[in-house]
Image (cartoon, rainbow, N blue to C red; front, side, top):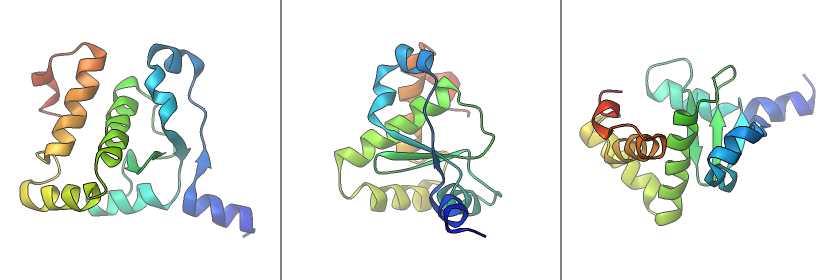
Length: 130
């Protein structure tokens, strides 16, 4: 295994979002996007899955290999970028919320789903079940 392959396995590969998507949602350009890497694996393991669809750490979003670049997913993860930017304590608060309320009811996950729904023009109620 070469060093480039090893690095890619750990930190993934940079992803350029489709131009049309960034034209519809210019705020997506504020984040760094990567595909693959250890973060999506660790996130998945924490959820009892092989991989998470995506995970955000500070201003970088890691997307699982093969996951569809849907508007909803990307906007949801962008909201997590905003949450990281809002407070240095965000990672600790996120973990506490997950332990206390569970992943789906974590207030930061609820907020990210609502943000994506607002940007997509959906009703917030329809996203609370997902």
